Image (cartoon, rainbow, N blue to C red; front, side):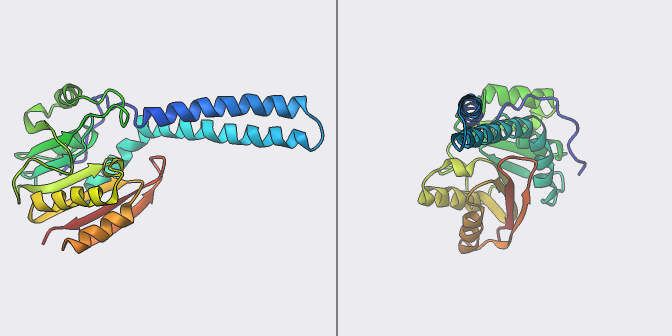
Length: 243
């Protein structure tokens, strides 16, 4: 199937709280550093220089994360979807769909299929995260008739066994802090996949853990792709297939 057209929806800022904290920390450190560097003398002056460097580093991280949200994540979305074989009639599940970045792009690769997104709609993870926003973005992208959203937790996916041809997830599973609970979510992904169905999970944490769990659950062809640097922190993708 063809790659996704240029974006039309608004897919928000990822981890806005982290960006805010980095920005504030950077400003404070820069101010302290300038005061120390220009107000002290001798060896103490270098303490100010260290504060300046750390402040600059925090601000650069914040800028990188904003760029990731406004530009980089669109490239990573395509890398994720390009790792999957597409016919055009798949039923796709996006776990932690947020405002629909991956969900709507997957729907664009379908001729007769359906793309379903689940989320708990936490605005700490993504600004303006709400199902109405997701559906509005689907409308703007011209895929509303192929998109459905459901409020649900990844650890308790409300669908039958063997229902989906493809399951994707982007920057979502790491938000489950307990390792055992993450395993539940990965188990749910395998459960709802049809035999022969494919999964692709993008994240910046726990990716080796995901791969190991999928192998334990019997998935085949499990491999890790990346790292990729269009998103900060850098991300990797674990792909595989349900036997």
